[in-house]
Image 1 (cartoon, rainbow, N blue to C red):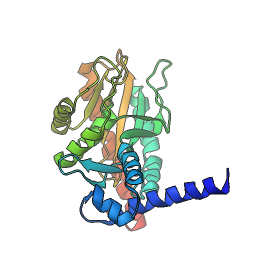
Image 2: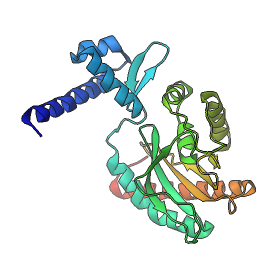
Image 3: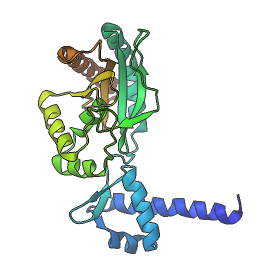
Image 4: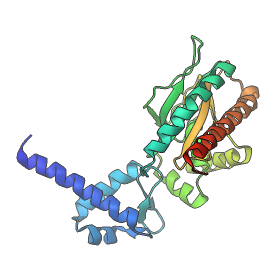
Length: 261
């Protein structure tokens, strides 16, 4: 790598960080022109940086007035918290996996995707499984959809406009309006279902983890033959009990540390 290319790459990072700082520290959404004026960047560079950040979920663009603001995927500095929750959740997830005989997943919102940060696999030979660190779509996974249900309608609409509705199976939700309707159902019942939407042979049920500053959720995945629709409520009840147990464990830890929720 030449000295010139090294200087260019460092300058590119600095420009991107400057843009992130300006948008994150401004109390109102900014227009494209305002961002150019505040960063001093060329129009073409500004467009490229903004497009990349929007695609990653770090920024959201409002289609009504074309303004930019921080999005749901922006890293808020809570990595230590997610690690703590992962440590607390692991033994509780193992207990649930043994009880149901299925795979249990802990996921976090990462940009416009869901990222698996802990997976306890089913002890059975045939099982649903995801790799730790891998990512999945929001619109067709139970983890993704249940996390979407946490957002206010105004912000939810902006997020859905940025999602790429990739078809995974014949049952994948492919429109903003259909996903909005699904989110309303999730809010009403308290859990999300991936009904053969991400994998034609697997179902998944997910609930939110309510106390975290990050957008985290817990799910159970299984082959559809072992998780028929008439068993979904049973799995959801067990997930809710598990999350409540996790909340209590977190409260106990906070008490030891002199903190409170």
